Each structure stands twice: as C-alpha cells, then as structure tokens.
Image (cartoon, rainbow, N blue to C red; front, side):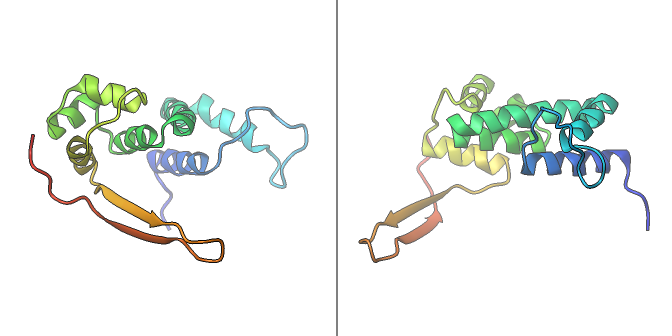
Length: 152
C-alpha cells in the first residue's frame, strides 16, 4: 500500500476540518489518542502554509454560511475547483466585481446569471416547491431543473 502524498494528506485533513468545526480552546484533557483535536489542528497549521490558508478560507465560509448560504456555497465550490473570481466571471459572462459581491453576500443574482455561474462550477440550478400539508400530513416536495431561460 503506497503512502499518500503530502498534498493528499493536507486535502484529507482539510476535509476532516470542513466536516466539523474544531474549537480553538485547548482542553487540558487529552483525547483517547493523546492529543486534543484543536492542538493537532494548530500543529498542522504550523507545518503547512497550504493547510493554514485552507483552514482560514473554510472558517470564513462557515461564518458566511450563517449569513447567506448561496454565497458561501459558491465561494466554497470556486475554492475547491481552484478558480479565481475573474475566471468564474469570464466563463459566466459577468464581471469579477459581481462575483465578489455575490460571494460576500451583498448581491443576489438573477436566475439566468446564477444558472451560468453554477454551470461554470459544474453544478445545476434546481428549483424546489413544497406544499405544506396539515398537522398530520407530510409536506410534498418537487424539485426540477430551471427551464431554459431566454438569454439577456
């Protein structure tokens, strides 16, 4: 069995940190493996610039997610694909300042623009409708792709 490369190891650790936020407070009590998770994350950060950068980016994305889920999703996906805002904007036929405002949660795009941005990020925009039932009924949900829209 081959040993993972340093880059694969950083990616694996980042994925772990994305799944569950880690407190920055070090607890005096050790984990069953001997090192508290927050201390282990700090050590990884001291050893790897890439890990430190990614950890900071995902912390900002988690914070943004509380304010605007769509903005956080787009920013996270762009980061995962290693695309710049300018690259996304050029491919989606919009401006990089628009992408910047969108990712900060300061702007809400129209459906045609959002559809183009998500296509650049290898995703499809879906629309969902939920019919709420009574107290004893389950809600009915339908989700479908956004229909083709007339271009600008």
